Length: 405
Image 1 (cartoon, one colour):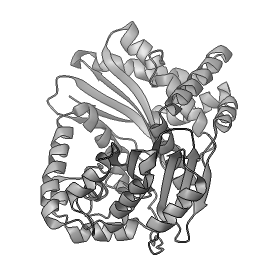
Image 2 (cartoon, helix red, strand yellow; image 1 turned 90 degrees about the vertical axis):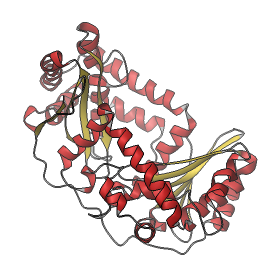
Image 3 (tube, one colour; image 1 turned 45 degrees about the vertical axis):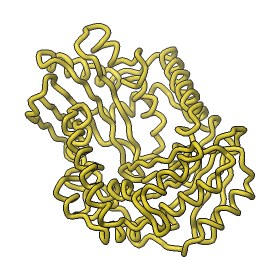
């Protein structure tokens, strides 16, 4: 996908993807997430994201919410371990309205105390809802197993104690420290002239230049751990995994391909065929891969009846061992490459998803890979490389295991 970039004098970067469409997808991605929180700020990045909509120097919360909805637009936000997104989908004729509002939210939110008390209850309910879903909670607790009591190991939602201690002043301090102009990208996908985008950005994003004064702390030395937790669940929930490669690692495409073969979203994945289709021992079995700027997480999740826990774990380890010990056939490798590229192309048809992915890549690496570059990288992966990566990441001595039952 063809894209253009521009950097404002204050350091804010613009990413523009021209397409013929009556709709514009645009927003900010800020290089600030859970891993940028201080020791007593667990959940701050996510709580700030909620509070961005609760009032600015110019608007009350209801005015923020209705500004774009009144013309059919949508505005939303979410937080990850490393980024915060504030974004909108809007009819193209209302682009200026959207850019002005987004700037007001990101640069001029006031975090009023009276709204803080109300939203604190909302986030606490979100935490309780999450705690009631072991299939989701186990992912957070597994991160804690891999990264320990560090920012990367913490839940994005935070804890009840840290939320109770959060104040408007602490929120403003977090934003001042993390929402610096050298760590912000504004992205847009739509039928808008590049010169118009730059002109509007200069008009509405003209805040003073700021620079980040801290560096992210690399994760500590990893030690594999096995842990069982009594959650009084109807099913047994299991996760097996390891730290993985970072998002610019030379072998990341091999690992992406390997993960897709093992337990990606396709019904024909090895784990799904082995655990679910052949034996009927689980409804959900999947593997996931998350790449951060300096590390990553690879894991397998399975939810099964308590009586099948040992059988499921045995089958999972068998598949891991097979991929680490034997090269896949040329035919299987070609099929896997075709499958993953097809999934990526289909995902790109969701334009919002595509531009969010591109914005993250541009924020963190300064570059967005084209489909041709991705194709070339995947085609360069050999069967021996897959086996080498599997032997590295799937090494049984390096695997951590977490079990809820």
